[in-house]
Image: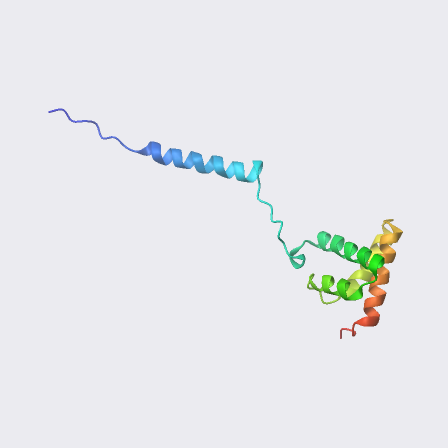
Length: 119
């Protein structure tokens, strides 16, 4: 009676590892996942600055302070007036648009009149 040599199933493991490696490369380099449902409070500092600019420009066009305040609350920041003021000053110092700087400063001024001071 002839005996067959012992066959191993290493090809299954190598196929699995190669498939995982190809899937990982594909998901990272070719089609990376993008989180398009991030909350404003989860944004990077630069994205928060851009968000504040959009809020200030919207406020300057419609003068709806309640809506601007509710949008700013989504950023989950305590010192909103100080941040708006500092951003307006930084934009002026860096030579950015004067219209945007004015919108930020105007919103900061209105909010400082509307909100109680933070101790």
